[in-house]
Length: 150
Image 1 (cartoon, rainbow, N blue to C red):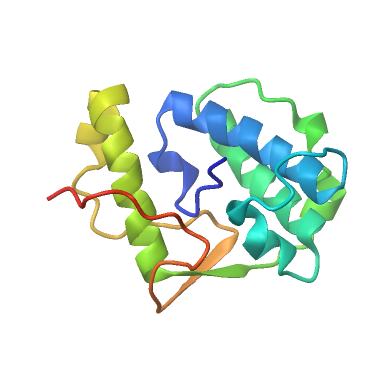
Image 2 (image 1 turned 135 degrees about the vertical axis):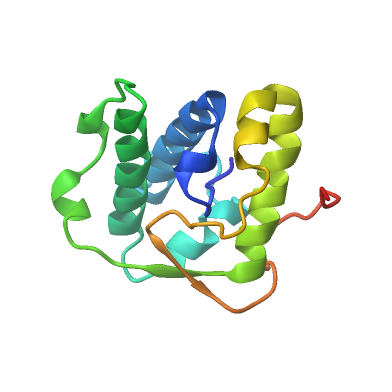
């Protein structure tokens, strides 16, 4: 499960579909509707918030909005839109955003070279609108395993 902190506009088509599915799974986990993935590290920042369900619905709404920009037909009924109307933010560190961007670039080199070429020179990496960037290192829940692309 990867709940990207970077803006979904950077994701290739496969990545966007995957984050939609994985976010729906995360929603079920946070709602207590599944037995697996309860302790997945990617869920920590949602679980640590005051309203994890509200936040995952907002997260899903931003993924849905990107899908609409691309002409996809994601099922909006899977999101609690009313819960998503109250905007909250959670923080993500600058180094986490940078790490995720590098992680995505590694995937795109193989999976979607055209998308890689489109985004590889991005200087200012935008977060998913749910997140507010703060100074800091890679988040403690992240599993680090990638070399940096130059």
